[in-house]
Image 1: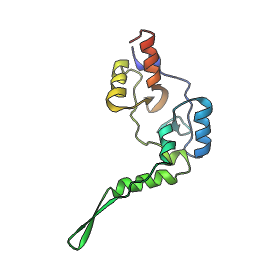
Image 2: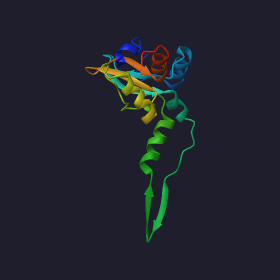
Image 3: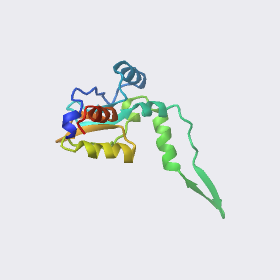
Image 4: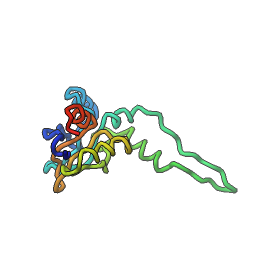
Length: 150
């Protein structure tokens, strides 16, 4: 079986400018764990997940500063800046993962299942010719197992 056989084709998507509270309400109302961020032509720009919303409430880890001779070395400064940008973001674009792992509709389901386990990823946009054609979630894979399709 292939991803195309189990993927959700009617995907709830969001635009980059969607405000965070509106995005949170959409995920709750639709009972979904995430949504692809697409442009007006359906091109995948990124992915927002529930974790992206929760990230805004996390504690920030300050960069480590070490005194060496007469100077200082800073570690983790780039990660700190990325975290701060996500925390103060007001739109889907500000909290989205710009490089989500995507699947082709022709990928075998067992390969997708392996990614769930090995990479701890539970939501995959399915892209063909640069356009979003569906999504596959961990739940879709579990449903396929329950139906004896895998």
